[in-house]
Image (cartoon, rainbow, N blue to C red; front, side):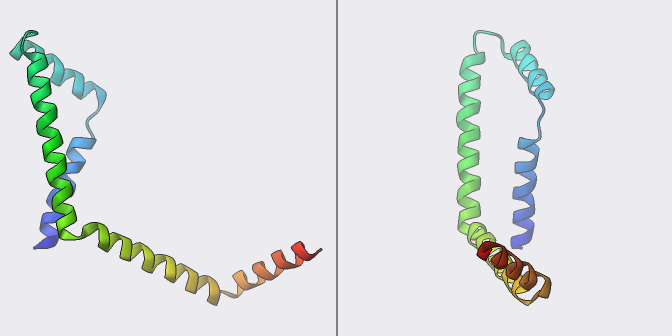
Length: 105
Protein backbone atom coordinates (compact mmCIF):
# COMPACT_ATOMS: atom_id res chain seq x y z
CA UNK A 1 0.00 0.00 0.00
CA UNK A 2 2.82 2.38 0.86
CA UNK A 3 4.56 1.87 -2.48
CA UNK A 4 1.36 2.76 -4.35
CA UNK A 5 1.09 6.04 -2.43
CA UNK A 6 4.75 6.84 -3.09
CA UNK A 7 4.31 6.14 -6.80
CA UNK A 8 1.37 8.54 -6.96
CA UNK A 9 3.37 11.16 -5.08
CA UNK A 10 6.30 10.82 -7.47
CA UNK A 11 3.92 11.09 -10.44
CA UNK A 12 2.48 14.36 -9.13
CA UNK A 13 5.97 15.81 -8.59
CA UNK A 14 7.06 14.59 -12.02
CA UNK A 15 4.19 16.27 -13.87
CA UNK A 16 4.63 19.59 -12.06
CA UNK A 17 8.37 19.79 -12.52
CA UNK A 18 8.62 18.76 -16.18
CA UNK A 19 6.61 21.59 -17.70
CA UNK A 20 8.59 23.51 -20.28
CA UNK A 21 8.61 27.26 -20.87
CA UNK A 22 6.46 26.90 -24.01
CA UNK A 23 3.78 25.02 -22.09
CA UNK A 24 3.78 27.64 -19.35
CA UNK A 25 3.38 30.43 -21.93
CA UNK A 26 0.45 28.63 -23.60
CA UNK A 27 -1.26 28.21 -20.23
CA UNK A 28 -0.70 31.89 -19.38
CA UNK A 29 -2.04 32.98 -22.77
CA UNK A 30 -5.15 30.84 -22.35
CA UNK A 31 -5.63 32.20 -18.83
CA UNK A 32 -5.35 35.75 -20.14
CA UNK A 33 -7.97 35.09 -22.82
CA UNK A 34 -10.38 33.21 -20.53
CA UNK A 35 -10.07 35.28 -17.35
CA UNK A 36 -9.11 38.64 -18.76
CA UNK A 37 -6.35 41.06 -17.78
CA UNK A 38 -8.34 42.58 -14.92
CA UNK A 39 -8.76 39.39 -12.85
CA UNK A 40 -5.57 37.62 -13.91
CA UNK A 41 -3.42 38.89 -10.96
CA UNK A 42 -6.07 37.71 -8.47
CA UNK A 43 -6.21 34.29 -10.11
CA UNK A 44 -2.40 34.08 -10.18
CA UNK A 45 -2.18 34.83 -6.44
CA UNK A 46 -4.86 32.24 -5.70
CA UNK A 47 -3.07 29.67 -7.86
CA UNK A 48 0.28 30.38 -6.18
CA UNK A 49 -1.25 29.96 -2.71
CA UNK A 50 -2.96 26.75 -3.78
CA UNK A 51 0.23 25.28 -5.25
CA UNK A 52 2.17 26.25 -2.13
CA UNK A 53 -0.44 24.51 0.00
CA UNK A 54 -0.30 21.39 -2.17
CA UNK A 55 3.50 21.36 -1.97
CA UNK A 56 3.37 21.69 1.82
CA UNK A 57 0.84 18.85 2.03
CA UNK A 58 3.06 16.62 -0.14
CA UNK A 59 6.05 17.38 2.07
CA UNK A 60 4.06 16.60 5.22
CA UNK A 61 2.78 13.39 3.61
CA UNK A 62 6.27 12.19 2.68
CA UNK A 63 7.55 13.14 6.13
CA UNK A 64 4.73 11.25 7.84
CA UNK A 65 5.61 8.16 5.82
CA UNK A 66 9.22 8.45 6.90
CA UNK A 67 10.49 8.43 3.32
CA UNK A 68 13.30 10.86 4.05
CA UNK A 69 14.56 8.77 6.95
CA UNK A 70 14.46 5.59 4.86
CA UNK A 71 16.40 7.29 2.07
CA UNK A 72 19.05 8.38 4.59
CA UNK A 73 19.31 4.82 5.91
CA UNK A 74 19.71 3.41 2.40
CA UNK A 75 22.40 5.97 1.54
CA UNK A 76 24.27 5.21 4.78
CA UNK A 77 24.08 1.49 4.07
CA UNK A 78 25.36 2.12 0.54
CA UNK A 79 28.31 4.15 1.78
CA UNK A 80 29.12 1.46 4.36
CA UNK A 81 29.00 -1.15 1.60
CA UNK A 82 31.33 0.93 -0.57
CA UNK A 83 33.77 1.30 2.32
CA UNK A 84 33.66 -2.45 2.91
CA UNK A 85 34.29 -3.17 -0.77
CA UNK A 86 37.19 -0.74 -0.79
CA UNK A 87 38.73 -2.35 2.27
CA UNK A 88 38.42 -5.83 0.75
CA UNK A 89 39.60 -4.88 -2.73
CA UNK A 90 43.37 -5.57 -3.06
CA UNK A 91 43.74 -2.96 -5.81
CA UNK A 92 42.55 -0.27 -3.42
CA UNK A 93 45.02 -1.43 -0.82
CA UNK A 94 47.84 -1.24 -3.35
CA UNK A 95 46.74 2.21 -4.46
CA UNK A 96 46.69 3.40 -0.84
CA UNK A 97 50.17 2.01 -0.26
CA UNK A 98 51.47 3.73 -3.41
CA UNK A 99 49.98 7.03 -2.28
CA UNK A 100 51.59 6.64 1.14
CA UNK A 101 54.95 5.84 -0.50
CA UNK A 102 54.67 8.95 -2.69
CA UNK A 103 53.93 11.09 0.34
CA UNK A 104 56.97 9.75 2.13
CA UNK A 105 59.28 10.53 -0.80
